[in-house]
Structure formats: C-alpha cells, structure tokens
Image 1 (cartoon, rainbow, N blue to C red):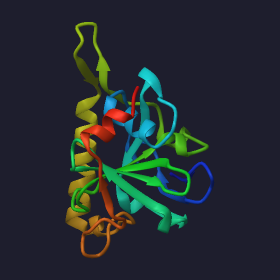
Image 2: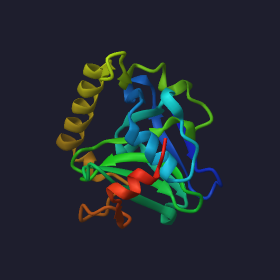
Image 3: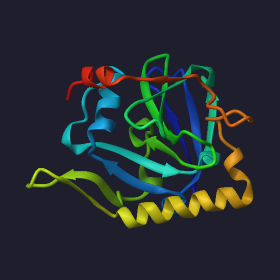
Image 4: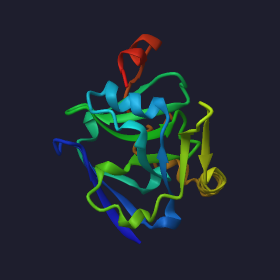
Length: 188
C-alpha cells in the first residue's frame, strides 16, 4: 500500500490518495468522446484515441492538502457523472457520481508522478472497433470492483467520508451543467 500524491498543473490544488494498491481500485483507460471532450473543454490537448487513464477507487481515500476551495465541477450529457477540476488552472482531476451514496471517485492518472501503485491497466472502455461500434475489455472486473467498494462503503458508513460532498449530501462546489452546444465546442 502506498500514498499517492496528486496535483493540478499549477500546484494550487494538491492532495493524496491513501493506501493505494491494485486491490484498492481499478486502473482503467477510457476512450470515449465524453472523457476526451471534457479535457478539451477545460483547455487541454485532446488525449487522442489512446484515451484517458483513471484509477477508480473510493472517495474516502482522497484527501486534499491545499486548494480545496479551488475545486470546481461540471456535468454534461449524463447528470449522474460529475467531473471535478482545479479552477485555478482548469486541470481535470476526478470524476464522481452525483450522489455520495455511490462511493466512487476516479482520479486522472496523469495527475500523479508515480503510477506504479495503481498496477497495470486492467481494462479499456469504449474501444473503437472496425465496424464503427465500440466495445470494452475487463468490464466485469470494473463493475465487480465498483460494486464491492460501493457496498462496503454503504455498510460501513464510509460513503459519508468524501471531500466531494457536504454533510447534507450536496456537492462541495456548485455544479455547472453544460449544454450540448458547450460539449460541441470541445472539438476532437
């Protein structure tokens, strides 16, 4: 188990993922347009077809050392998924669900210096296929891992231990709901 520091581009928002190992979450790579467009919407380069790497874990493993007041959040297409970023430099940081009761937080792996505690990538989401459709690898492991972590958090009450939501269950920052037009402006 290792503690993994993370940071936004300017260093205004920093923190730690605690007690991380491959068993503490799922190392995934998402190739979907939404994840790529979210990064582009924030003013960063398109990660391209290689997609975005995440480490999916429980929110109680996330601690902010500084800059928590600079956290901002938006949603689009699916209001069930919140995309958290550092407003000081528009660096994408985390994804969570829109309710703390689903204890899920995925850190963009690029926000860390050392990715070895996450282990190898276990699966890919929304991989383009020759027929124009998309598919997944390792999806069963991701779903099973998320269900185990979420169930454990609900039973133990750890779902309440989250820096992303207030005690009343509301997001810690005002959620900006982006339109289809906003999403379209984030060209790939």
